[in-house]
Length: 209
Image 1 (cartoon, rainbow, N blue to C red):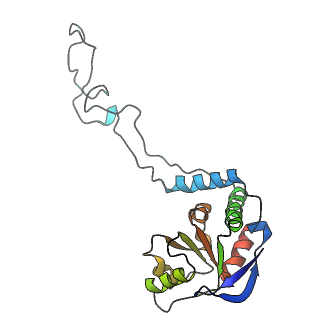
Image 2 (image 1 turned 180 degrees about the vertical axis):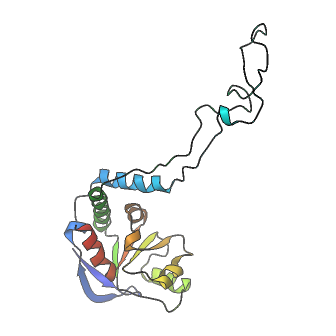
Image 3 (image 1 turned 90 degrees about the vertical axis):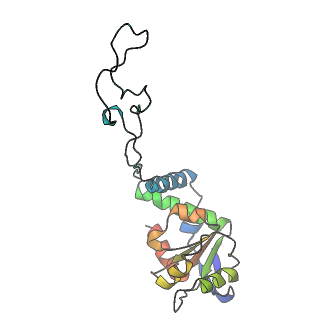
């Protein structure tokens, strides 16, 4: 699959790159994508929720009324879950929501996500660029040139580029990541995927193993 290489002004550089069919043109595996996205979202959960149970509620442990003769149900403690202010029955406890997935499945999910974007023609290959200083205005100009100012976009860098990252940080609809930070969720969550030339070789090398 051949894709034109654009510059930051949105113009054709006259060069084309060949995207690997084994990464960008496979039959997407929807279940692998589902599992990888599910794991990503599960890992975002803190799992620090907690409700006090009967043994943890502050209060007296004395028997609040006699056992018999009251005409109502017997009760042994004000901390009973049936009373207001008592403990919570089977309340949430701190836990981890994370779970493991095989590396091969995660690679398949990533390749499926790339293939979905390629099939929808939502992949843009951009020549490597940099800013002398962080500038949100300059980054917005790049988005306008690529007609992405009103769309969710994901820029994938080949190497760490602090100025480009800082330039995009104030923009909610745009996200800039390195190859190591790339996830199936991030790929599918963006309307358009912008791959810098230097990132292509690393992506294909990592996913062709």
